[in-house]
Picture 1 (cartoon, rainbow, N blue to C red):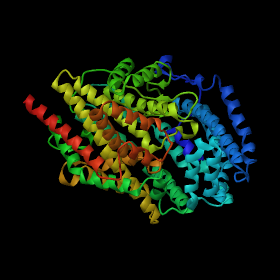
Picture 2: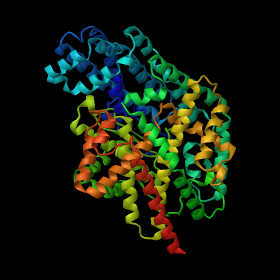
Picture 3: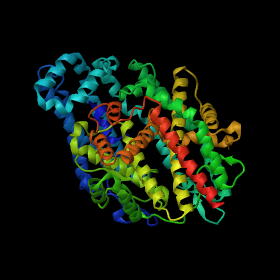
Picture 4: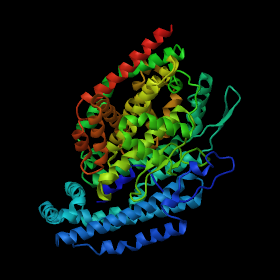
Length: 622
């Protein structure tokens, strides 16, 4: 029961209270920060709720041995656990959000840890449920579901529990493993502190005299610079700093890999990949077909790099040349611009979508701007079912920020549409589905901006940004997935994995994808440290689903464009389905089968069509 319900968090870390801002931090405008009082009015109220959750654990434990007594007894246990989880999720969201406001704040991190401990204990106190359900047996459980309509919201979750019979251990073993749940997540927590808090980031001086602290946010800005010297300086400095931590981060990564391999073995899976695909009942063909089709499409990726070299005016493309926009755009997109443009672009999805999104964006659901100590990147937290989603952004008033804004609101709208039809028990959607609305909203935005361009250069900018999105999501995330699988397979073979060895493995795949040996993109040895920068490697075979979601989002958007209102309704019905069935089934019902080559080949064709248009526009300019 716990596994499927926890998908409400959409695989994003979520946590507690009001921000403490330095005087010179951006984002001090209260309207640009989230209102955590919607969750709990005070920290005391949060702590009381946490204590109430903990106090209720004995009642869950007292239900042992009752699941097979009657339909009513099964329902009472399911309802008790579900209600407890819903309240625990709200407690956890409050704590994690506050912790992400300033990772340097030890008090906030301690509160986040209290929430994690609470969830660890929840896992302990519910560890007996799945083995007992399996012991009762499918025939009896299904009879209870037919007998008592109150069990309908739990039917899918009960089926999922029974499906896990071959990988569920004895009640005693399950209980023992539950005691270690928090420890199993320690490598990810340690990595996060190293990456976001402990590394003393250097300062560099750009060609225009500006000084920039080269943390993750500074690196993200500097690598987009139009100055090639600035980009090279940023790459050399950033990856040199990371290389100093290669042994430590390598040890943390190896600890994570060994833990996951051991857990997969303990539960009788053939591999970690087997376990991760089984969790969402995904056919192995989905993963294998993605990797095969992406490798077949590497000539298209290399075509893009050659077009990039032409447009940047460089004879030999280097790895530090792949991020700056192909055409400069002298335009800022502040928060209000991002709201207005996103709503205009989403008109294609209908008045109900636009109205709901407009109302939500005017409330304080977002923490918008970068500030010292704030978690980098962006995410949506949708676990607080009876409140609303929260969004963490690091908005820099550029087009990337606008695109990220649309992306994260895709997640939020998914959560809102799911809540329209789904109770808490089936509102949480699998990762395999989660990235579809976010990537499709990026596509809608890109087409809207391209169609409303006033000049050829502006149109080239948006088309180029679309190409870069396809490179970064379809090709790059699949490259990460190949690398991650190679790591797990090496660990499963019993190979030693030091920081140096991991870097060597990453470098081989990085060079192959970028055509290094054929002179397409030169990969300097220092840049092979890039694997240390990717937190998703601690999310257990998560990254391939960005690429599958990009593929599915593209296919669904094509249906919207082709079929009009019917395509829009098909799209919304997928979102409204939440986690009411297995994700592969939900997506197949929406008309997209990712176990087949077709959707991947269509995406590659779209990428080639964009390049055809860009080359035509470039020829017109000459």
